[in-house]
Every structure is written in structure tokens, then in C-alpha cells.
Amino acid sequence: MKHISVIGAGTMGNGIAHVFAQYGFQVSLVDLSEDRLERALRSISSNLDRKVKKDQIEETEKQATMARIHTFLDMQPGVAQADLVVEAATEEAALKKELFKKLDELSPSTAILASNTSSISITALGASTRRPDRVIGMHFMNPVPIMKLVEVIRGFGTSDEVCGTIMELSRQIQKDPVEVQDYPGFVANRILMPMINEAIYTLHEGVSGVEQIDTVMRTGMAHPMGPLQLADFIGLDVCLSILRVLYQGFGNPKYAPCPLLVNMVEAGYTGVKSGEGFYAYKNGYKDFDVSPRFKS
Image 1 (tube, rainbow, N blue to C red):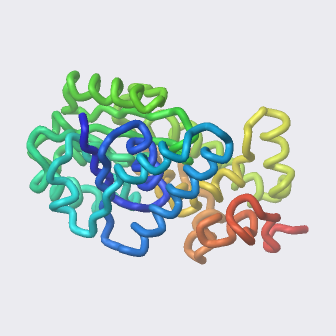
Image 2 (cartoon, one colour; image 1 turned 180 degrees about the vertical axis):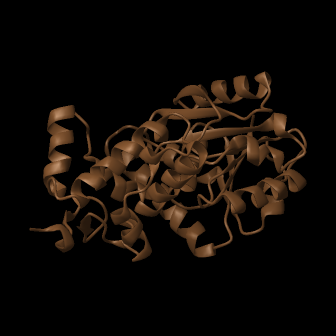
């Protein structure tokens, strides 16, 4: 593989583009918004600058990485040479199905179509195309340049050859791929989201406060980040979307989203990206305090 197309220039998309470009691949980053594309390039450049300052890479390597990333507002030229397309758009099933249908029409017939979805069925996305055997999930973790895990999700029709190719490709970019089957939430979110949801219920029922809940999980369970802070970092809207997929997929009440989470998302308090969730953020996720709404 030489050419990677990434659809969506948000946090996950620009992280995926960064990693592939850093490891020598030609990357086409596609988005409908010129502003998002410009912000993505600034973010990648800033992340690479930090690596240069830490002597992890040379300035020449940074410049070579940036030179491998090409931006497109139009999908057709953006995927014309793709060996692999990685979709990193909004976590909405209908949107992703429509995207995969379009990608199937525009990308080379030999291209593998991958989704960075955190919960949506790869089988359903594959069924939107004429190549379900070449559709697969590549669920990267955030922040992509740092986190090692990639969940490689096999749809019902995904071929052994395609799965093996993506497992090996993930290793080429210094990730640790884990093959999983296509069931709601896969592995990571099937385990993680009920924990986050239970932490929100614990707050909602007045068992303890935001900082206290997070402290218990950080210092008692050795988690690097408490579940409420992690939910803010992921995005409360994303957490809600995944829980709804789990609830619909399994029909088990244990996956029912906490009413507090539903209310916060409906009110626009989605975490770091909105400036407030369980914590209030003044200047990104590193400068925060408990939201005034949850202070006793």
C-alpha cells in the first residue's frame, strides 16, 4: 500500500492522517470544510513540533511528513488513487452508510474501505457497497499518534486476505492490532461504555461527586483518567450514541443511557469540545475544573 485516503478532518481523521504520513504513506485528507482541513494541518504540525522539541524526530522528518499530506474538498480526486480509504466521519449510521456507498462508486475497485467507527456495524456498512469482502473496521484510539491499540473489526463478509492485510498494515505504523468480530460496541466500547454510564448513574443518584468518583477509579483502579473526565474527552454525545447502539443491539437494560447523560447532551454540554461537561474547560482539556453544576 502506498496511498491512504482519510475521510473527515476532525480529531480522529487528522490523527489517522498524521500517523500514516509519518510512516511514509502518501495521504489524501478529505473534508467538506476548508476551515477543518486548515485546522487539521495546524494540529498535525503542532503535534510534530512537540516531537521535534523532545528529540523524538528531526525537523526534516516533520517537513517530510507534512509534505506527504494532501488536502481535498472534493471526494472524487481525494480517493482516486487510494489503496485504503479510512472513513472518520461523524458517528451516525445513516451518514456512514451513504458515505460507503459513495466511496464504493468513486474509489478504485481494489481499494479496501475501512471505518473508524466505535460502534456501528461493519457488516451493515459493507452491505452498502458492492465489495463487502473489502470492507473492515479500523477503530483507532484517541489521541491516535499516542495510543497503540487498533481494533480491527471483521464484518460478516470481510475476507481473510483483507483482515490479514489490515493487521499487518497496523503493525507497519507501530500500532498493536486486535482482531474482533462485528457485534455492537466491539470489545473496547462494550466494556468501557457501561463503566462510564455507571459512573454517571453514581453521580446522578448522589452517591458521590465528580472528583471523588474519578479519584476512586484513578487511585484505586490505576486508571490513567477517571471515567467522567474520560467521557468529557471522548465527547458525551459520542458516549450517548454508542450506548444507544449497545442498547438497541442487545436490548439489555444495563446499556440504557443514564438520564443525566441524555439531558446534558440535549443541552449542549458535550465535554471538552463544547467547553463544559462534567468539568469546565478554559483552554483545552489540560486546563479544567469541576463544572459549577456539579460543585457541592
